Amino acid sequence: MILPHAKTRMHQRGIDANDLGQIIKSGRIVEQSMPEGTWRHTVQGRTVDGRVISCVVVLENLVIIVTVINERRER
Image (cartoon, rainbow, N blue to C red; front, side, top):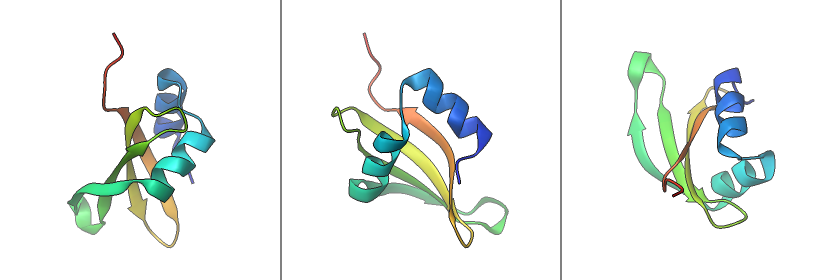
């Protein structure tokens, strides 16, 4: 499940479902927190075209994509 906020950020940042799948499959957890009793994991990886992107995921019987972040700003 991809939350509406994440879909908006994906559109704004030129990230598609293939990129997101690549990040989740080959990325690594770089941060964890438990606000409000639910684990949130920041997963960082490379898109299919090599950009470094992070996504925040929550595990609640399924993976929920909260947001996506460009880690290297384009110039």
